Image (cartoon, rainbow over all chains, first blue to last red; front, side):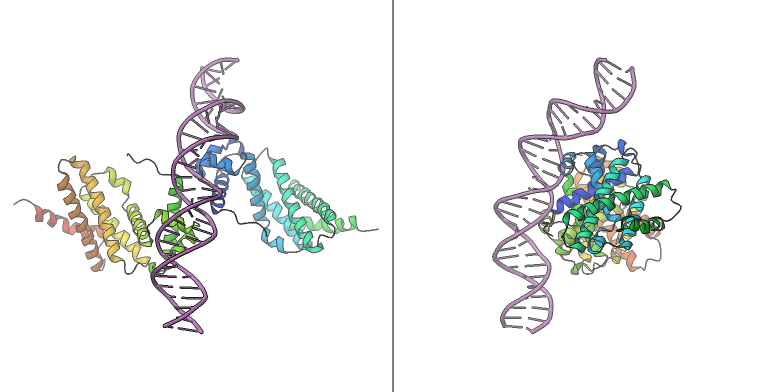
Length: 186
Length: 186
DNA sequence: TTGAATGTGTTGGATACACGACAAATCCGC
DNA sequence: GCGGATTTGTCGTGTATCCAACACATTCAA
């Protein structure tokens, strides 16, 4: 909306850095990746890295957010309304994202990843809710977004624990009717 | 050798521009490619283009030179000596280069292409000769390089005219003994 | 022929990036 | 533990790139 388009140089450089990080993640564990590795791979100066990111954890966070958003098909949800179909589809995207992560070893950063997933989900849910309810009850919508984001994330953890024999869609659909009754007015 | 390494920014930008040009060459004819097309495809500002190239003809020239050098396997010849094997191999590289060009339509620029090929060949022949003859007769070596570069180019034109039924190697090898006797001392 | 649209080439000022240097932190063999 | 080597963050300065604006050339439909 009001976002003045960012300098193409920073778009390019951010992409170079993130791609380099993803590339390296497929060869080494996170803890073995140095900033020097990244800047060398990205063909940019080390000082430039610090111009865009605070440190390597900041980079991790932004890369994960972005990858998750791609999985979530951000543009789609931004214009759509929140219903059961969207809810199921988002759950599917989250499980996909987590599967892709386990390939690139990020051992020891499960908490960080969990937080990122929840934060992004919260933003998306909030935007979708806003679109339907016209900000008449802003605080209520925010709380709803929080509840849904934590709930979805919890479900994805449970799905991983379950051994993933059922599909994500079926898995979450099992619960939906009970969630409904669980919050229905008496 | 003495070349102070160039700023990585210019390496990146030159590559972006050249790649964009090659990409566009595969879709349009040269005459239909605008500088705006190139800068858009390369994701750089139009002013930046003029920082690196005089105009689109300058770009054409530099792209062709570079592609030809890759075909010539520059690093290899730079360290090797000039003998019959190298001579044949260079001829092969030139015919290869011309075949790849006819795919990307550069109609109307045959003269430019011819000049570029000759200039690059001249440089390479001269360097190889220098390596063997220690610059004892600089002027003689320069003239030799000119003769060989024009000769090779002429042969490649003749090869194209001939219908290319014989392989480039066989084609040039047919002539080599006669060239030798043609310049043998009486 | 005219005029609107698009492309060319150039300029000045703002900003992102490269580079070298630096102190501090961390790693690692001995 | 110690000491050298590597990595981390930061800074000042020079330079490559961006951007908006400009005059001019070319194209092309009315």
